[in-house]
Length: 383
Image (cartoon, helix red, strand yellow):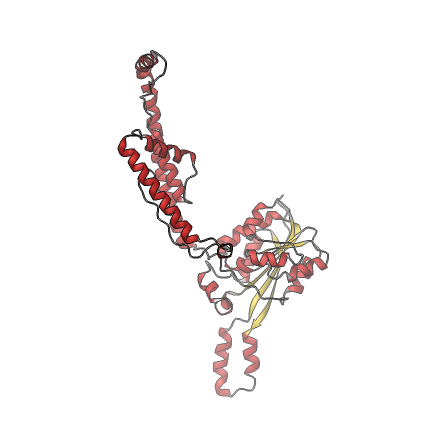
């Protein structure tokens, strides 16, 4: 539904057809379309009645504008981001002017005369302060307008540089046990606090960690996936890893396993992520990062994810550099997964000599294993 514009009482409200009826509407016998049409007719009748009252003089002059002003002051601003900010600035501008014509109506005999005398007597005095306050309020409104315009430009530039990936598109996880699961389990076996696994998928690693006596829980941005894993008895929460880390206290984790969407955070997002982890993970805690290589991203990732993701995976060397800057040492890098170079070498054994040069060039273009695992220990205690 499009909301009636402020100040336009005679505006007819239109309804946009929803993409689909609410779940269970047909089952309950509710006719959504007929209900919307009836509501539309009722609003049209209200508009017509208001027009008749206005024409007959029953509605005092300025009464509708006063209602709009009160509604704007007492209700939350519509919209999000810069839209809500602009509406707030417009309200400041509207409120900057102060009316010196105080009401003098009174039901007491002589009350109106006394009020007019008082208004005339102190008007010159009050006007001096009101004029100064109005100038100040208008200066504040102008400054807020400049800030709003700068924020709008900044928002447009940042949105163009870092487009967000649609919420329904997530980096898929391979089902079952991964090639690096035993490495992660061994690295995390000695931690003393809870272990977080971001985008844990079916919860295979969480289950293995809990069997080993480690207090492990997971995160999954998909409510459906999180709910199905939780129903199996595991602690899996429907949250994004950045939002979850912000809600934790200092030293709340003994370790963490990161995979999935952390691959497409980009340098800025990864720096922010590691900055949070450096304070959330205890001294001697363990951080495990699993990722595709940048070379394998285009052919191994889902086409939608590869095209719409705001960034591509980092090289293992870049992760190592960022980890060292945030106090995670020493760093181990393990490589695994599909290895097209090795497959090519095995399949080319005994090939004719004429094809050896071509196969050598093709092998040089291939980057080796498609995935890598980084294990880092939190050695620097800054708390």
